[in-house]
Image 1 (cartoon, rainbow, N blue to C red):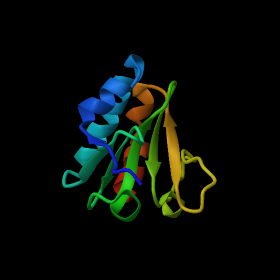
Image 2: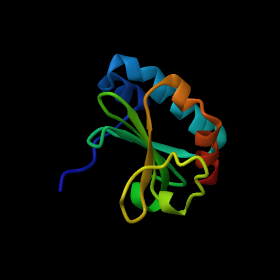
Image 3: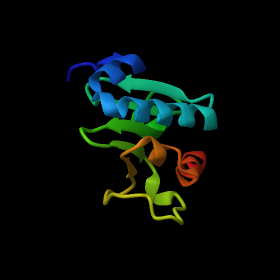
Image 4: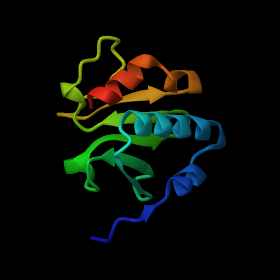
Length: 119
C-alpha cells in the first residue's frame, strides 16, 4: 500500500473547479469556526479535507469536504447519529452521510452549521 499523499488546503483548492472554490473555502471557514481546535488533514489521493480530533480519518474524523465537478459534499463519518430535522443528509452507508452543497448560499445555511456543531 502506498503512503497517503498529504497536502495543504491550497492544494485542494487548486484541484477544485473555479466555481466551487468559494464554496469549499466557506465550508472550511464554517467548520473551523464551529470547531476551532479541529485537526485538518488534506488527503490529495481522496481529493478531500478531513476534520477531526486527530489525523486518522475513519477513527478521529467527524467531517470532510469533498469537491465534485458540480457540487461539494460536506460529509459526516457518523452521520446516521445526527439529528437532521431539515432532511439535508443523504447517503445509504452504515454510518456515513453527506450534504450536497451546490452554491455559496447552500454553504451558509444555519441547519448545516448545526450539523457540524452536533458532529
